[in-house]
Image (cartoon, rainbow, N blue to C red; front, side):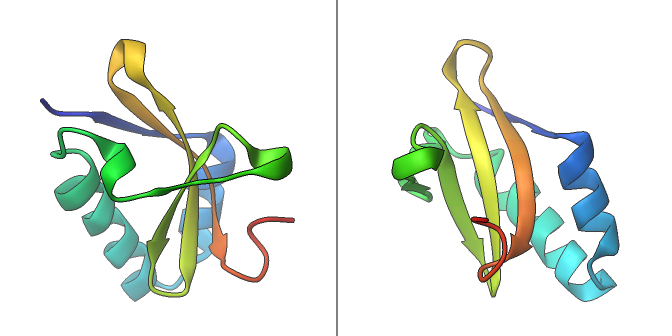
Length: 88
């Protein structure tokens, strides 16, 4: 079962601002690890508090904040950022 990966406009801008090595690493993670998994919840961590209902994926020092849409088999990437800044 393949999951579709979509990035919001904000996430696209954040990805474009990263250096090329980090951007490639994140893109590779999304394509090779997240899109092909049977259940994207196995590789992520559920968030709590104000971000409850969203999921976090760790790629080096960067975090991807995502919404998992089971009905359409889609992982929507909402934010991409350094671990110190992404939760603000």
